[in-house]
Length: 495
Ligand SMILES: [Zn+2]
Image 1 (spheres, rainbow, N blue to C red):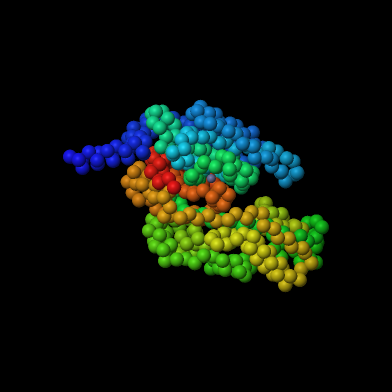
Image 2 (cartoon, rainbow, N blue to C red):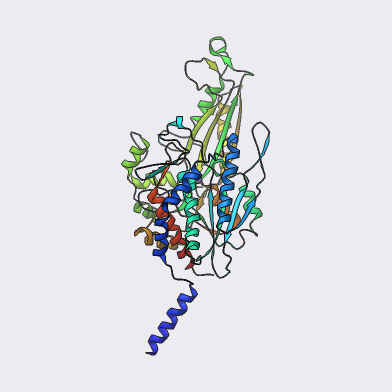
């Protein structure tokens, strides 16, 4: 009897300490009942052409930020709109950057505070690029919601908003305090955000315990937690020759053409078998451990499906682990384009006077972009020197984003596993992202908070490409995942 009483008391005390027990079924019922509204909200957001790379669309982007602000105000959040300064365009004109919208829900000191980061700007999209539907008119086909920004990153941002809204609508106390930080320049490199994060380190971020980013996707049909992203060192290499473009029929043979120089030096960056040829660049790369290999073996990744999806005859590696390793945790060189080169239809015989190659090297632990910058610059100049060309070479690193890596043993990841289990009934895969989300590293370095990437996008959502989509399933179940995640984070022991 005595025993029973003390056990009961302990149980009571525990549930009191944890606040409300989770009425998860009520919350998921609420989400199910409101899913048409959620889809409509996504349709409204997608209809705004918030393309941050096109300055002629800046008014639309500003309107998008206004819609986010309005929504968070309606939900009675403590909303703040933060100025991140101006942007200087290539023609020298200066325009204001879209303001960053922040909001806070709850300020209970006894609870953890989670900051959700997201962005509502999008990549460019035009029907003529090969979209089957109007990219700015969300269209549902076979359970998929097609539209620019649907998966990257409008649906995930809305899912987070709806997760908080569901708790409030059911008059349930939020298990943690939730803050939002929503920006509008992510697709062009989060201009101004670094400065804002540094300035807000001891203000907005002072009471934040954890940062959650949902700006990526799963690797397969199985839900995933993302624990690393590659950084990127992006270069311009410019060769300048004659004062003006020449004509091959008249001047060809009289000069070493800038394009010839450029192609020659580009050909010294990477071998046909994928080996980076720039001296020293791979020296710093962290060793591929047995433990990592085991994680990679667990990942549900079908090489054949991947090969077919991207449409190639043969992949560079013939087994899953090596392929994933080269997608996620080894650097690679990619050549993206040549500015100034003739690229139109037909057979123009022009000799361009000035050409600029654009290439990038993905960065992984423990590479340092500043070191890579010197190695690449030295290498290209050395190769160029050997050609004894009268032309001029200029090399410049224009982006130097560091990689990001989280500790998968951290309580945030344990909470993620529990939330995935609760909603999807499976263990999540632990994955890394081959692309770059520079803000993750900035958050880590500047705020020193723990970060998790909790994606809800599908593996085949086509971010940045034609026919981007998110499935209704991922969007709605993703909302439930965020609801569950807030609850699971509240169980992390306060230190
Ligand atoms: Zn994104």
